[in-house]
Amino acid sequence: MTTVELQAKGLMAGYGAKAILNGVDLNISKGQITGIVGANACGKSTLLRCLSRLLRPSAGQVLLDGRPIRATPSREVARRIGLLPQSPVAPDGITVLDLVSRGRHPHQGIFARWGREDDAAVAAALEATGTDDLVDQTLQDLSGGQRQRVWIAMVLAQQTGILLLDEPTTFLDISHQIDVLDLLIDLNRARGTTIVMVLHDLNLAARCCDRLVAMRSGRIHSFGPPEQVLSTKMVKEVFGLSSRIMQDPISHKPMMLPISKHDVLSDPVR
Image 1 (cartoon, one colour):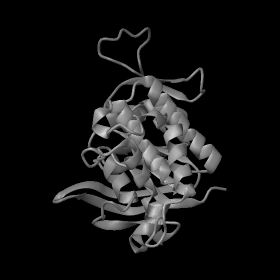
Image 2 (cartoon, one colour):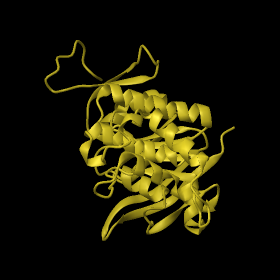
Image 3 (cartoon, helix red, strand yellow):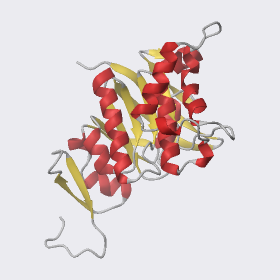
């Protein structure tokens, strides 16, 4: 039986006078991988920022283990939830090792010193992301794909029970996309890490996620297992795209095939 670990209740949020989320209710179960999908500007990143306590909702609340996350001390939240935003920013000239080591800050405390446990966590994160040979390089000297893997290493070094990732496969070629998603699945299976991530590729999301959240205009359009969420109806209503849904011959999960106006169909879509 799954336990709700992170919960959004009636979330309303936005930026200035612009409303983005419009009454979002969502339960994130402990130990599951949840993928958030939807068209641009539908509220995916805003929802993730609210779940991480980075953005204060104008109404509603986020609960962490049943407690209001706003009432939870910041350091405790940082030890429980790791966040990789869409466009993270680092100081100029910072090295890969220094950046990944910053993932250990929530574990330091006022009097705690850097120890073997911190060294081990950083080394494991570097190895897992294939960035251990980049430790002496500065972040700005790396390719987009390398930088993305380094940011993921920093979040992994934090060793939280919950990971929130906003488009973690951005800038990565297909091989590294699979590597990163495999890494997250391994974390989930080995440590029971709860993972919530925004993904653009519907087929990769269906392959690796236990649950999908499809968003439209700041609301939850549909939520559930990929087999229930990924449908021609959802793709049309959320993305405005005609499609066919087939079974992936490898993963046996649903697979979406987009239909262009230039495609010639062997039989009409009903």
